[in-house]
Length: 402
Image (cartoon, rainbow, N blue to C red; front, side):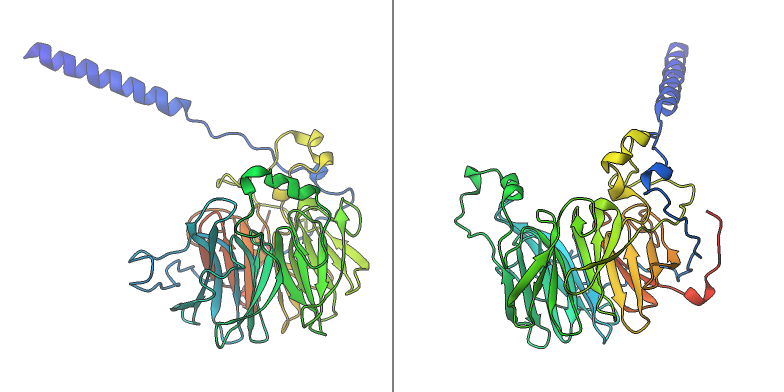
C-alpha cells in the first residue's frame, strides 16, 4: 500500500515537472514593429479619433433552418459585402466548393433583408462564378466580380436574372493540367478581357470601371452597354502604376479611387486615367500585435522595406473601399491592424474603429466593406469567415492615445 502511494506521488511530481517545463517553453513569436522606413519619406502622421460602436451581434445574420446544404448553413470564406438603399445586405461568400482547384466553383451570393433574415441565393451556379472577389449594388442591379472566372456578371435585383457579362471564363474543357497557371502573368492584357479582376465602380455617365487586378495591373473602362473603351495602368510603383489593384470606387467629383494594395497606397485619377494624386494613410497603431496569422507585420527590418516587402500589412494599406455618396466620405479597410478608416475626399482621416481579433467587435483582415448607411458598416472578413455589422457613433468619437 505504501509502495503504491509512493509511486503515485512520484508520478504526480513527474507530471507537474513536465507540465512546468511545457509551460516554460511556450513563447509567442516576436514580431517586427512598423518603423518610419515602412512609409515613404515625409509621410505625415495623422491623428484621428477612435469612433465608438455598439456591441456587435455575430448572430445578426439569420440563416434558414433548412436549405440545400442541410441544417448548418453558414458563411464560409467571405470575400465582399454590399448593401442597397432599402438596407438589404448581399454577401459574396466562398463556400460549397465543387470541382477541382482550377475548374471549380466556390462562389455564392446570399441576400439578407434589413433585419438580417435570409432572403435568397442569387445566381446559383452561374457560369461566371468560380472564386468571387467583389460585389456591388448599383441602380437596381447587382454586379459580381469573379477573380476565378475572369468575369463580371450583372443581375437584375427584381428578377434575379443575369442581364450582362463582361470578360470570359476559360472553357470547361481547357487542359489546365498541361500548363502552369502562373503563365497567365506573362500574357499581354486582352481588350475586354480580365485576369483575376477584383472590383467595379461607375462614373456619373454610368461608364463602368473594373479593377484588373491580381495578374494585370490596370483599370479597364466600359460604356454602360458593355462596350470596351480602354484601359490604363502597368506594373510598377510610379504614378499610374499598380501592384495588386484590389478595390475601386468613384466619388461625386468623378474621381476614380484605386486601392493599390501592393504599393500600400490609394491612387486617384480622373475618368480618362490621368493621375491626380496619391494618398498614404498613416495613423499610429496601439501597442497590440496581430494574432490571426495572415496580417503579421514584416520581418527583416529596414532592409526589407525598400523592396516593398510588408506593404500588404502596413497599417493603412487599402484593402477595401466603400464610398458613401450622401455624406461624401470614403471608408477604407486594412489588413493590419484590421481597422476601418473614415476619410474625406482630400484624404484626411476623420476617425477609425476596430482592431484585429476573433471576438465579436474585433475584425480580421478586412477584405470588403458596405456603407450605404454611413453609420452602419459591414465588414467582410475572409480570415474570420464572417460578416460583422458595426453601428458606429462618430458624434461620440474622442481622441485616444496611440
